[in-house]
Length: 400
Ligand SMILES: C[S@@+](CC[C@H](N)C(=O)[O-])C[C@H]1O[C@@H](n2cnc3c(N)ncnc32)[C@H](O)[C@@H]1O
Image (cartoon, rainbow, N blue to C red; front, side, top):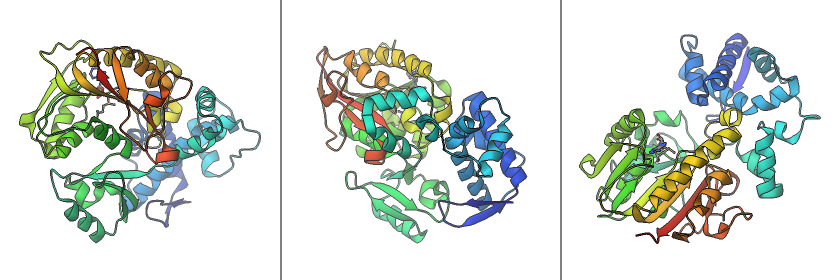
């Protein structure tokens, strides 16, 4: 048997070691071979073999996340080429030691990632990498579905410990919950939406107002579009584009569940790099596809699957998208959930001649200092702001 800490609730659960090794090995297999998130990998790994109570399953899930977050360290210790289950066994037995391991191994990240971040933030890299291993849970009250009072009352009744955010009063940080957050009544009723503070900050930077016409160039699954509609009391008009049919469909369904007035949101499946639209918009949101390095706290599988070529691939798309954005609306907000300057400062600087940058998020850090215009950009970090890692850049187009 293995004793597993259930971090969200406190307390321990006992599970058979055989099952733990099997599920963790399968999770690792799915992350490495199918490049899926830990959540998807765990679901697949558990299929047909996890005949467990809710508590036990949750405990196993927490353990799978921790193992995946630590996998590179375990591989450094044991060496490459071992079976998935030998890595898991060594980790479960606690026989992995940091002695003589290089720094990047200790943090469970690739060498290139460690060296790159070290160059960008210097000594702060240690704090930053440590913070990538902790997930802070943020949730916003969906005022399209319920009042703030109602949601807070419901959370208190369910015994949830939370703190209201000082920057955005409809946002809370969940400190402790007696059950998995996704099972709370307010979450199940779409009155409370799990959304990181950085994602909320992006929409706040756009400053949507009732009556605004807004183009969301990469909207799916619609977390930011729905906040736009919530902040404007369903009175903005949004054209929501996305290249993926499947994600657009899911996004549309989510918007409906969240109480968004769909007569005011036009969902269009299209490649925003080539979109031809008549007229221009008051505001444009470009929450671009990216390598997701800033989302490691949410999905530790990214520590394994993130590659330099992925960063380069997305950077090229982002540059095409940002150039297009300056022709579609006067005020533009560009964001990526990435710690990489190739997806942030470098992309923003490709349009620096045709825009004026501005900086509405006062509490954000500046961009990386080795890049032009760095003080005009905003970066949010897990170790400084308790958010995912985000790059945000606000611009006024001179082309229109
Ligand atoms: C970071 S996600 C957007 C998240 C979304 N804004 C939200 O808050 O829920 C990036 C999205 O960009 C879409 N995408 C990728 N390339 C695109 C393109 N060329 N044109 C439009 N959408 C694109 C992807 O399908 C993905 O849904």
